[in-house]
Length: 71
Ligand SMILES: [Zn+2]
Image (tube, rainbow, N blue to C red; front, side, top):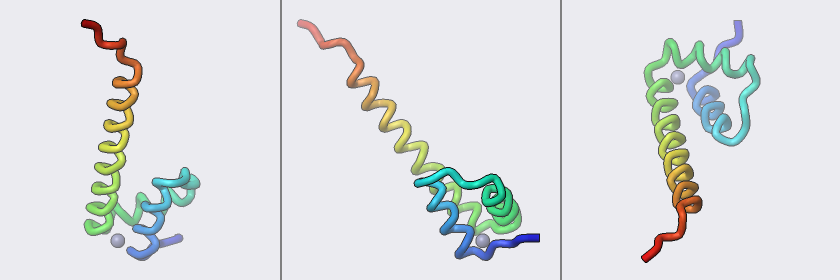
């Protein structure tokens, strides 16, 4: 069974922000975060940042699409 160490796991999580992980990578990463609270927290923080960025992008989009303010 393929296992990750913490360094590999965190690096993979960082990479996942830039490219989609392969199914096998996601599986081993999930298994690692299941047993490793440290990497789980790291992933949670990344997820939070990602959500925040997404929210920011969505907001910017709304702003862009908003009708011109009149009067
Ligand atoms: Zn770990």
